[in-house]
Image (cartoon, rainbow, N blue to C red):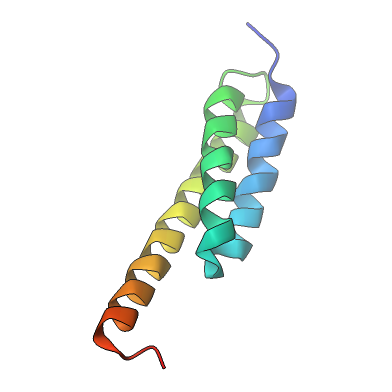
Length: 82
């Protein structure tokens, strides 16, 4: 089994950050997607639980970010933004 411990920890950190930066989709999307990729590699490591937690947090951050973008696009299209 390959050692991807750093990727599991990075996934956890990026998952936590994605829960903070979802308010700004410009930053939320890249952080969440990189967290997902690191989480997939982190699951193959010895620290499988950290990789799984990072993957779940990144998925939650990505879903919230997509919802925020969709609501913003709807409000912008209907003129309710300003």
